[in-house]
Length: 177
Image 1: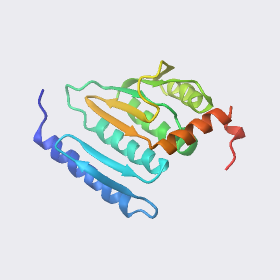
Image 2: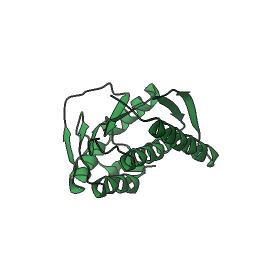
Image 3: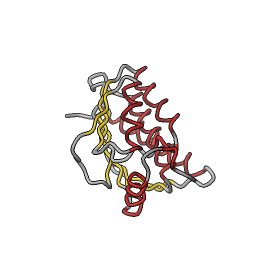
């Protein structure tokens, strides 16, 4: 296994620019908690910021895959909340993947009304999506793009709120702001 120094430095520069960019937007707050040679940890202030930051990272990774890296994605997500707050961004991300010739699987532990949106949308975009047994705790989502692994950990209060959302409603029409 090897990794190029140039790739590490380019990635660090990119993530530093993301941190700087998000930290200067009104209401945005991205804090780098830890950064090492091949590992960084960030804390974001909202699910919306997380979704935007995550999408930017995934686009960057897909645009910079090594020539020997698989053009594949694998995601395990507990709750597809981003379809409620940022649907267009998710569709654009997967259209970008498709334009890059990528294939992939998106997995969910249950078919609730939020995840059902994802389970219909991803196949319409050319990606497989299905319900499988729980692979990770409800506080963690995982994406793999090429050889890069990205994890997100949700605070317990957010996990509880998302669980309440998915158990209290059976369609988006019932959700009020």
